[in-house]
Length: 259
Ligand SMILES: [Zn+2]
Image (cartoon, rainbow, N blue to C red; front, side, top):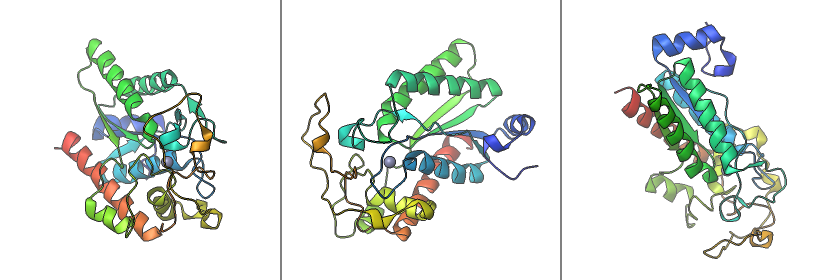
């Protein structure tokens, strides 16, 4: 029997057996392909979401479906904008339909406990809509057994953790934490080979006005694409953050599905 929690690595029969006999929790990471400065890879969001889902799945008897790697359009004030090189932006309708269809298929396979792991800030309300519609569709077809939990994994961070991670600095908030200390430290811990700190450029944090303009204003965004400076990032800080996020996802899943 394969010692993996990754759905793609399982045969259909083993996958089906774990759903049926073990009532496996099915994790669906949803990330993005989006610039993360010169020093982090384009796949940072889906890689982190998948890493956290895998670690949680290993603890709670779960299976990780392949991540949705293309995601909601990057916005200037939260991800650097849709004009950036390398980003593949989906229209909101496309993401809603994609996630909605995937959820219905997972339910068709027999998944009853589904955890959607959101790893890209712009996805948040779009995923709510996709989950809502999937739950509504299933219920209207008489399937009342499926529960979908959606977790924006970095939504809550302990104040003491933030004090350590942003020692002597001001936490810019999750919206400006794009390719900054938090994401960079986490990638240093989870995917060190993909981080190039020698490519970091000296820039200040973005200073956006409290509104948006369309067509977008690329000149609002720091040239590197980082919305806050990654200077001060460290592997140990990444470990602190990632282990907290993994523990938090496990606690949520245990509370909702394993109580
Ligand atoms: Zn990101």
